[in-house]
Image 1: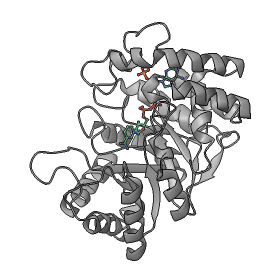
Image 2 (image 1 turned 90 degrees about the vertical axis):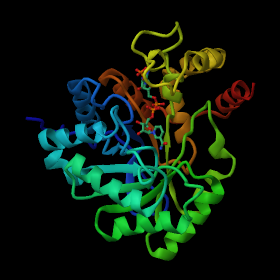
Image 3 (image 1 turned 45 degrees about the vertical axis):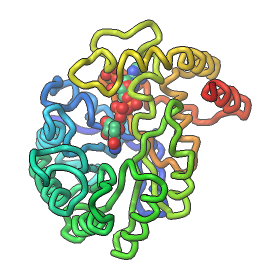
Image 4 (image 1 turned 135 degrees about the vertical axis):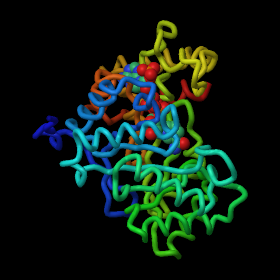
Length: 329
Ligand code: NDP
C-alpha cells in the first residue's frame, strides 16, 4: 500500500493563482506523455507517487491525453483507486476539453454540448466526482465565447469542477473570456499557455492581461519538450520524445535547429552550478505572473532533477542579460 511521505510539504513552494484563493506548487506534473495506455503503468505510477511525495499537489490532464485518447485519465483513475484515494483532498486535478476527442460535430472545439459531455466522460474515466480545474483547451473561432464560457460556468455550478480555466487563448480572447466569466459569477482562475526560453509569446501582452485581470498562469512545456535539458546535447537518444514517430510534436529537425542556442544556455547553467533543465524552470518562474511550471517527466530521475530547480530560483542581472543575448539570435 502507498503511504505518502510525511515530509511532502517541507520543500515545495506554493504560489497563489492570480488573485484567487488557490495555491499551486511551483512545479506541477503534466500527464500528456508517459501515462497513456501504451506507456508502462508502473513507471507512471512511480513518477506520480514520487511527485506527490515531493509536494507536487497538482496533476494536469486532458480528455485526449494518451494515446489512445482518454487513457491518461484512465491511468489516473486506477492510481486514484490504488494509491491516491486517501489524498484526494490534498490534490488539485485538472482536465480539459477542446481538441479532437470523438467523431462527429460534437467531439471537439468549444460548444456547450462538447464541453459538458466531455467533462462527464472525463469524470467517469478518472473515478472522480469533480475536477478541481476544468479548462477550455483552445479557443473556438466558430462558437460564441459566451457559450464556451457558459459551459465552464455550468460545470462549476453543477459541482463538477471547482474552478474554470482557459488554455491557448490570445491576450484579447483572454480579456473577453475573463469579462464573460466574471459576469456569470465564475471568475477565470488560470490560463495555461506554452512558455519557455524557446517560445516567449506570452511576454507579448498575455502576462500583462493576466496580471490586470488577477488570473493565474501555469506554463506548459517549460523545457520545450526536453530540448532545454541535457537530453539532446549529444544526439537524439533512442526512446527520447524526438525519436518517437507515432507522435510528431517534436521533430529531430527542430532539435537540431535549436541546438547551438541550447549549448550556449547549457554553459550558463553550468556556471550557475545547475543543470540546464533546472535553469530553464527557474527562468520561467522568474516572472511574478507565473504560478507554476507544468513539466513532463519520463522517469523518476528526471522528475527529481526538475524539482531540484527550486534550490536556486534567482538570477543575477548579468545572467539574465547573457541569456537574453543568446535568445535574441
Ligand atoms: P516539458 O517541456 O517539461 O517536456 C517534458 C519532457 O522533457 C519529458 O517527457 C522528457 O522527455 C524531457 N525531460 C523532462 N525533464 C528532463 C530532465 N530533467 N532531463 C532530461 N530530459 C527531461 O513539458 P511537456 O511538453 O511534457 O508538457 C508538460 C505538460 O504540459 C503536459 O503533460 C500537459 O499536461 C501540458 N500541456 C498542455 C498543452 C495545452 O495545450 N494546454 C499542450 C502541451 C502540454 P523524454 O520523453 O525525451 O524523456
